[in-house]
Length: 129
Image (tube, rainbow, N blue to C red; front, side, top):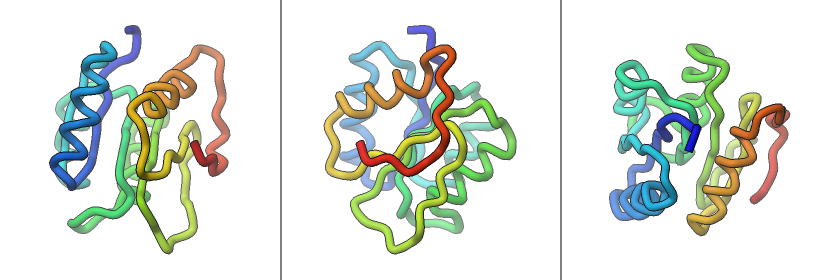
């Protein structure tokens, strides 16, 4: 794979472990964090190509805010958002997609491939996968 590491941010341990294992078996390098604060540390210490973040999680930042901060620091990062539910209006950054829970690993792999294809410009418009 020519895609750099995928940073998975998910507070549910079993969900995070499951998707990390699925992405690794698909050939991706994976980093994991259980909250936005951990994700920012991982982001500072490691090159990341794709941020895959839950929207609702414990801590000072939610997934919308995390993606906005990561995008501010590096606008080339692609973002995949997920949640089972959110009352907030979507705040997608450019080059991002939304995949609702529950999702299949194949949906995440497809989203990664769509976002990282050369020449693609994903507008950031909300899309249900």
